[in-house]
Amino acid sequence: MRPLLRCLVSFGGHIHYHGSLYSLSLGTFPPCSLRTSPSHCRSVSTESPIREPLRILFCGSDHFSATSLKALHNEHLSNGDLIRSIDVLTLEDKRSGRGMKTIREVPVKNLAKLLSLPRHELYNFGSDWNLPDNIFGEKINMLIAVSFGLFIPAQLIKDAKYGGLNVHPSLLPMYRGAAPIYHTLLDQQPITGVSVQTLHPRKFDHGEILLQTNPPINVPPKTGYQDLHATLAVHGAELLVETLRRGLFVPPLNPIKNDYKPSLAHKIDPQIHARIDWNLQDAEEIERRCGTFNTMWCKLSSLEDPELERRKRAILSDISVYERPEMDPKKTKIQPGTFRHLSMRNKDGSDPREVMIVKCRKGGGWISVGGVKVEGKGLVSAPEWARSILAQKGKGGKIFT
Image (cartoon, rainbow, N blue to C red; front, side):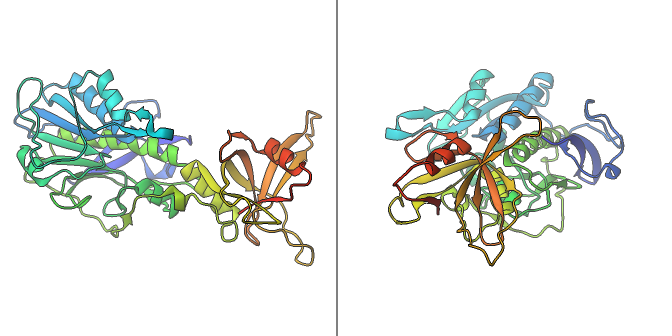
């Protein structure tokens, strides 16, 4: 992961020095140590207008939401006057894999078990579903939804004295929707951030913005999904706790206004977005998409009979741009999707280094591939796979399509 710096966040007109984030311009911020705890640029009051401790129902699912849950639990342990209790609501476990025999618990459920927090599960909100009481028999007074996956009914938000909050990994109203981090990377958006908003009773991501990253976080070229996801998860957890400490959700609200243009971040379908189009995509785009999705896929076919193995899917991993001069236009053109096995001599005399490269669209260069998994088989080293395939006799030439 790239070097990290802290970032400024704004709330209610104040500036607060906060968090561990991706590197930005060094001239933008006051000097600080990366190893010190968060400090303040200005002295601001931390007195909260909350009149009673929070009894939270936390709604979450994945690692992004688990980071916020952990931060809330730590705050609960150190500041019981702010957070009296935390109940956790997750979706019911789903079966997956061959024969639907594998049951995988969501990270938030596992974390709730480890933290010994009361747990509740549901498949969907029914008309008869009501907010549970906490372990003291008291009514829940705050809903917090982080990467939950279901819309919280308006009646539940109304039933909680302090309503509900949501942590969203984008600079709202940019990238409203299910996959803001993916779209940030796919669109090569140079900036991003986190927004803490109220839960809207009728629409996703249309609540009042109470706290938001300001200035935004720079997204360097070739930033990977996992790195950005982890950074925004930590930052979002910090902003959520700050929102509670400041009591920014207590009326009258002082929502943040900005000039970001509204946009949508629709749910990502790997069947579409992680599919390589060798005739249209260049090496840089394929490398960037692999950094976003971790793997890319295509079909393994035959030069002589393209339909022969049309159902064979090949999953490619560890993709990067490979510097190789394009062929002279007067010479034989190489069809996109053609792969080669190269043995590279090392200057130090050690064993030759093998590499598998694949031709991208015309003028789009080559990529190197680290791993190949053909449908029905296990993951293997791409150079070894290419060497064995190209050494086969009487089976025709293979090509990616």
